[in-house]
Length: 335
Ligand code: GLY
Image 1 (cartoon, rainbow, N blue to C red):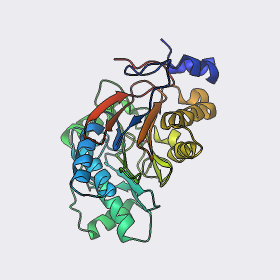
Image 2: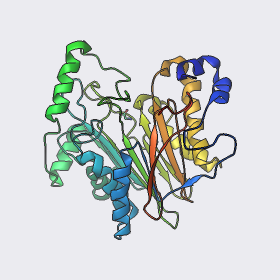
Image 3: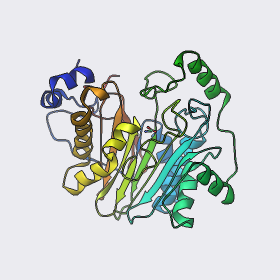
């Protein structure tokens, strides 16, 4: 088995030679790209896609669709990395980051939002009701209040209990890779959801409670245009998940879309961004996870991750949804 740690040690060329494909795709042939109406990060994206698909099918716009999709994990208290029930920062505050964007340059975002479940809807209001693109902290909270959003305590008993357990051994330090642990409450991350209409229009949304037990005030990649999400009309859209600092360093989603613009397939576009992180950071990203998903104007979809374990949910134009493992730099997808 090739681990990502020894893949980095082999050097990028060897690492790529050792890259294996996910369990549902063949290695030798260049597979036909997947096509989709909606694609999102992680297996919990399937429920988000269903809501997005239903909204679009009922006559909603693409923005309506991705907003409706993002609201699903935001309202799910069992999801510990998005919205209600999200892991708090080290001081016990649940702070949310979100962005929504279309292919015409319309964009709204919030960061460090507290006490409002649907950060994605506050972000959309920023886009539609202000001349700005990004509100943070107290200003974002004030705006949400003024816009009539209902305030709620986002710290559930379960997430509070886990935080208090963490405090016992954490020495009050954030842990960079506390997300993405497999098999536990922390094994999910940001949702990024991208949609492409039958006529090639694009929109995307991204929402998260960010890195668990982060320093108060930390903002990751997710709400930053070009980092957690980027949409460019006539080209494509991309979203990121994983350790936000690594995505932000390379303006990851903008890089993936630039790769699409240069003619790469969605998967190759995502892979190049992942490779660039490794080129730039080497062993500093050992053990960290970053994943990208991308869609182009034809609805072709691709993904790539640093580590095995990343999944994406794809909903086609008939409403059929599949969850697939992403290929990764480190090696084969493990069951
Ligand atoms: N990717 C989410 C975060 O790092 O905040």
